[in-house]
Image (tube, rainbow, N blue to C red):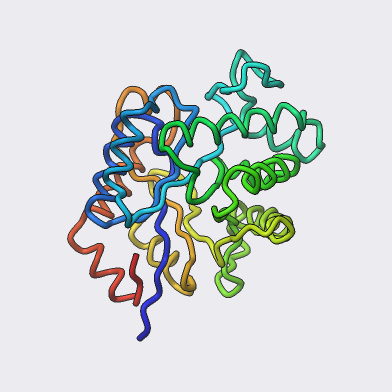
Length: 273
């Protein structure tokens, strides 16, 4: 059986000290091989960037996790629209994006500011670009993300979130929406000459009853060489609780990737990081 090499990307680096430390631990142990960084997070700073850069070395990719939803606040001081000083919530952002009522100049300025913050922290452009809560796929936002990626990090690849055609489950409404948004995203990325991953997996309902080990095996099945699996491992601290409802499930994912059985599971499926 030939070995498939995949990208297992831990999202939300920088959201809280405990999450960041957990992601660094997994990278240093070779359990994940990419991290996506939230440069707008209050907890992200130069020390967190230096620690991730050391853990990643030359073996793990570090990307920009473009963030444009509440409760986070913009880097660009003139950004609009805002709600109580923060970005709009996800639902409002998605609605306005589809109505094309976001402000293009404001979007571009904020996204460019996040690229500048990433380069200032890491001393180089990101290896790849994606979006918190998949905002980079939304109409209007995707145009700005792709254009600024081409200008600021032309060698980076951009995350499309469409599944392998053989893996589509029509009962997964979130994945179906991502499939649809990703079709146009891939077309635009190709027009800009930017690379995308061949397939994507990792979505699931963030419920306490989720059986993550079983779900992860379904993510592996049929994922081609170069495919991306999104994950959210971490430890819970007060800062995470303040900013995000996804808490205990992060610890469950972290424990799964930390277990001695995880490398064996990859090998059984003919997968390597």
